[in-house]
Image (cartoon, rainbow over all chains, first blue to last red; front, side, top):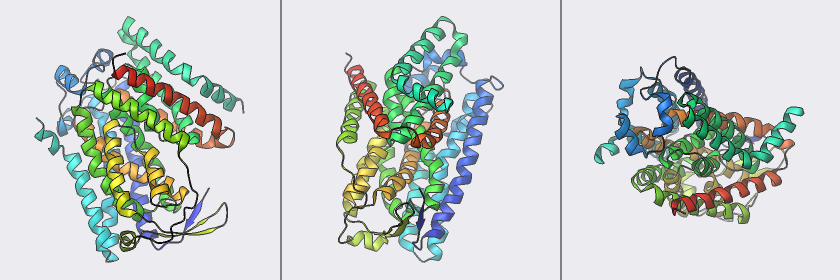
Length: 140
Length: 312
């Protein structure tokens, strides 16, 4: 099924679609590539794979306590370990909506559609806040 | 055609296959820790078949993933929900570009609702990781049974009548014309009850973040029945809203250490490959039959999750 959009919103939709397409493609390739490197043992995980069946029955809090897994963005410091390297693709995929929304803000500003530029700006702010891990610091 | 016949057979025995795969992987890996790789392999196979089912059944991957994997695999619900969010988000991200280019998804409709849903989605994720697992499990069982009822009872309207667009949607410029290439009809659409829609998406985003099930099951009825969005436009725009709201919650799970790549990645890859095949199989599978299989599986998984949460 295909449909044709005859609304004057094609520019913003096309910009969003392009950024989303490339971001998702890159994220997915990195996700699969880094996981293969991890699962085949080319880069060992911080937590040995054969220990995982005893650990993934724990809650996230207990798992972190038992394995000393870093929270927040500290996982970036352990990218030499396969399990944390695999998180790179997940982080890129999670960032895709934020980057795509940010990419259409200039389109709205050019059209002087300040209402939608503001909605996009606030949404990017919410996603940035969520990505920052600041909320996690409040709960420690 | 032979491959399709094998796939059909696989789908029919899927309800029996999942517990068997989970039990086999568990006993093998406990007997010999070197066999840990059976887990990601088993997850990949199960998610591959779930992905095939999800498309013709018209449900998102997350809503199948969380109750089924949470019910039959030994992973803690925290990790299952983290992976479920990722499964829901990745599928929606992959579909996004073509839905936008074809005009099936409308960005001006999506953005205000996505802002609302992403705000509450993070709150849902925070509460989900703070509550005891048994409480989340009971609530999840109830919500899955609710979704099953919604699948059985919800009405749908291809082109809802919206006599008058509300003031907010007019101010936001939501609406337009699209031409359905199948029917050849030019359809002018507008929406009403936008403020109520924004409030509803606050609730939907919260539930999606709390349970990690995505929210397509609620987005589509909300857009279609409440706001009067044509069904095809509602289904496509729902996917885009889901990708944004899920990203907000996924970041919280990621930063909290509640996403294990060994669980999440095989699930995402299996589901995405399965969904692509499911889309191709639409012509030879009977959606009504598939929908019955999915409703049966959700019913079983919902009851099982509820009973596990109650300690029965």
